Image (tube, rainbow, N blue to C red; front, top):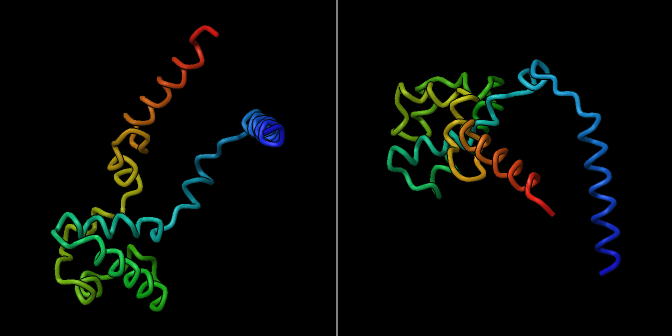
Length: 132
């Protein structure tokens, strides 16, 4: 038990140090984004078209492999290339390639949408502001 307390204390000190010196660089963050980060969104696109996720997971993986083999970003695969993997792909698949849309689509408790993050921040502030 004492070892756990010591470990947690160390972790909190490290986290505090990281946050105290954190510098956010939006341009560097944006530059680090890559289309393959949206592979799950590609799978979810097919789910919305009625394809079971157990299949879409493998199809998205095949799309990533096709992109790697052809030397193009996942978002640059042609509709024909995607349709070769599954016929449910259509012109609207181009909407998948938006990082903002991806984040906003996760609008659940603990999700990445702006509304969800604002709610999480409000909960944390309320927790920190309550009397001991």
